[in-house]
Image (cartoon, rainbow, N blue to C red):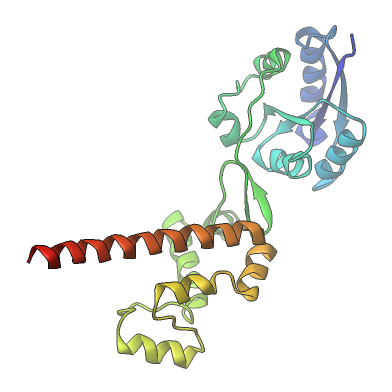
Length: 251
């Protein structure tokens, strides 16, 4: 029987004793008649990404991220879309993804879960081009850590910056008013006054390129959404027209 290769990627900074303990747990818990294993150590920031690439090249069946959500994201960003599975041995401070997926926080139990080879597909998302699997921050947590600010103060600082940066695209007045028409013209923004024209703007060359560049949708997905939304609009207009016709005949 061909054994599945499982690669454990661990940060040695977590401690020599922890690495030794992990190896002992692998030997005592992992079904070695079904799995081969290797333990690889990261040596610098983001090294986990390079090791994940090597695991794919080596035809590993799974890569086990031994660490927190940051280490998991690094590895997941590389193996996502490949045939390599992701397993987790939680060793972070929050372990948000492991908790969400109900992966045991004890290493021995997490390794035992690998033996079952119970797999599932999960959603992934990106923010500013960076992958995240379970959570993403808007910046206040970094302010708390780096500038020693209180949570409320850090949140207000971040929100203040967002408001400043988005001031040129925000309009808090009536979007159907003459004031908005003047404001849109002043800002150099398009102002489509009918639904068909507004929907058509979504499939403009500029819009399609932007969606593709940001990794939101490709041109096929954009055009499909346009066709669906236009069809819904046409149906609503047809229904309203028929209802008005019925009312007129009854009157």
